[in-house]
Image 1: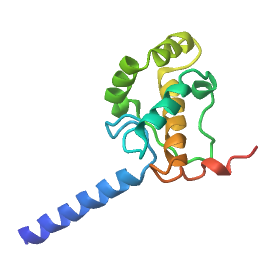
Image 2: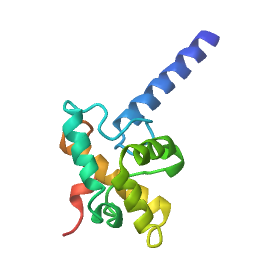
Image 3: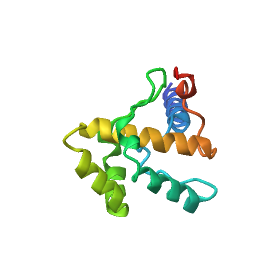
Image 4: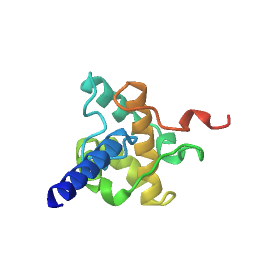
Length: 133
């Protein structure tokens, strides 16, 4: 019985890992947004460009997009990004009075997830392209 139970638990762990790997990027994997790309330098440049565009932080994901974000799970990546990208830090300070911390980071990581999907690093975000114009 114990062997069967162990096998069952291992199978569940594998299924959870596969589901997490298939989920859109949201910082919770503990990796920077450009990690895993075939051309990490190019994706890093694109991600850094997001920090210079205020729309990145002010436009929420479309309502029909299936995008889950948990700021607590992304804190390590957030801290690393703030150290790496001074423009991101400036944007955060500039927009703090207008946006909650959670909305700021959710919108930013959604934009990162779209970039990763466009470059084929991750699967497209379900529903992201189905938003009304």
